[in-house]
Structure formats: structure tokens, C-alpha cells
Image 1 (tube, rainbow, N blue to C red):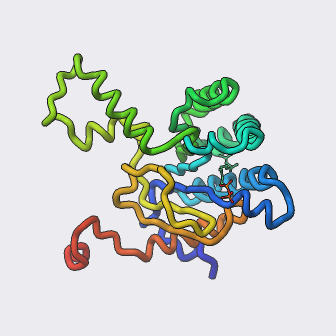
Image 2: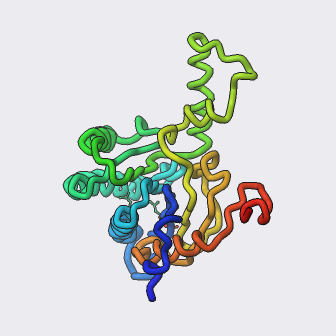
Length: 247
Ligand code: FPP
């Protein structure tokens, strides 16, 4: 029996977030340069999106490019930006055919103009799709996002008359890029690294973390099913005791 058959449909995570890692190492293992790994990473992203939509996951969020990734060699940053533009252009029809809405979080204005425009156009052209929301985190970092939220709240000060006691968790959450999404129940990171790398720090307060040794280009639908089965076998306690959860 494969992992897919072991998935309990009623206990499916509504939101899965993925830190796609290991493209560079995968490329080296195959005797190619890093860009080759990123190109194959696109196939893995497609597999993750397809499998999530087929299962009925409502939100899939992929960490595509971090704020820190701007510091990579110029040729790699440029190749990644070109790959993103081409991929978004190529996948538009598939997104619409599969009723998937594209969304993006991060400092999008810092992207090259062509990337920004293409992203916005695709978001607009898929906005009525309601089977799954596929969010790309682009030029994203969680500390940037939280800082921006605080700035936004302070800039609304005059209209809303916020006092210190009116600053609530809900208000902060509402001013994050993820305001319209539920928090992820499952966060997957590939390539054996067990760290969060500035991704969705606020949103993963109670998220189950799943680390796999697989390098991102080797990620398949089966890898996703395996992660979901592992997640479904965990007891989520949210700070309560085991007995409180059972009763
Ligand atoms: C991690 O590998 C991957 C990235 C930095 C992001 C790029 C991701 C893709 C191209 C996948 C496709 C995604 C979309 C949405 C089109 P790494 O370079 O950090 O690998 P390393 O740690 O082995 O060097």
C-alpha cells in the first residue's frame, strides 16, 4: 500500500507550506551547475502543487526566493528570476484549467519589473479560481513581513487611534501578507536541513514540522503523501495535555 491510500481525507491539512531546499546539491551530484538544479526544481514544485490540489488541500505556500537569496552570485539570481518569469508564463493555462489561484507574498516591489508585472497579471487572471491557493513567497522573509506589519499599523494610527492596549495578535495577523490565509498545519523542508530560515515565523507557532533528506528536485507526489501521513499520525495538543485532547 502506498502512502496515498493511508491518507485520512477528513484530517487533511488545509494549508501546507514548503521550504524547497537542495537544488544546488542535487545539481552537483548530477555533475551540473546550480541552475540545472533549479530547472528540475520547477518539476518538483509542479508535482507538489498537483498532488495538493488533487487531494483537496486548500492552500500551498512555496518558499521560492528569500530576502537573503539576493546575496547569491549575480548570475544565479538572474537565472532564477528568468526561470520564475518563464514558469509563471508557461503555467498560466494549467493554473486556470485546474482552478488554482496564484498568490504571492514578500517584498514584491523589489523584484525585477518583468517579474513583478507577470506575477500581478497572473494573480489577476487566476483570482476567480477557488480550488486551491498557490502562494509563492518571493523576496520574502518573516522578519521583513513582521516589520512591515508594525509599520502599517503605526501608519494607520491617525485613522484608527490605536492605543497600546488595542494592539492584539489578531491586529498583527491582519497586517501580515498572509492575512487571508489560515496558518499552515504542516511545514515541510527538504534536503536534511532542520531550520526555518526566516519563513512564516509568526504563522508556524503551532505548525507540525516535517524534515526529509530528499533534495528538492527529487521531491515527488509520494514524498508529499508520506509527509501528510506522518502529520496525521501526530497528536496536535496546542499547549493542552493529551487527556484534554482525547476527552
Ligand atoms: C533551494 O535550493 C531552492 C531555491 C533557492 C529556490 C528556487 C526554487 C525553485 C527554482 C523551484 C521552483 C519553484 C517555483 C515556484 C517556480 P538551493 O539553491 O538552496 O540548494 P542548495 O542548498 O543545495 O544550494
